[in-house]
Image (cartoon, rainbow over all chains, first blue to last red; front, side, top):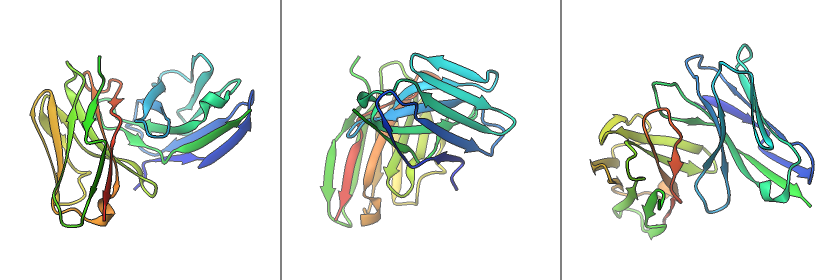
Length: 112
Length: 113
């Protein structure tokens, strides 16, 4: 049973566009929401993470928006670049539970 | 720091054979996780250890899978006997303390014929 639902499955944007990836969860015990970036042949790497006490977190060109009441969170990539082409995974975990529940991933292609 | 080290990087074996995947976590990290990645199911947690003790193995598919962490710097994931449906990329990750950032290794790509 997928505890975190992610959409879209794939996304193509032009350079400079703002891709948005959405995730939804059901378990209200989740209180840590990271996004991981994975390039082909590599392991996932943490990009940015948020806890439910804030509604938005920005790091460089990457922003997480969090809606606790809707149990949804999203990743926005500002001024996207071809080097951002990768697979992005959202995840969620309980603070005391440690294990990450991943979404199925979004394959992003940023065209020149 | 060398990061999380996994070996082998690629493994091709025949159905019924035993497969052992190895992981060396980042030095000083006390939590270790094994994940499996497939196209159909995405990234799934198999098992995780804290201070070398298995905390949750509910993700281990069946008795054919076993994992050990004999010390803080080494863990193994064993599949015996292997089946074609075990073909996947297996990742090991480690973290410093619970609920901290997990650092993933490069993965082991397993193909069971």
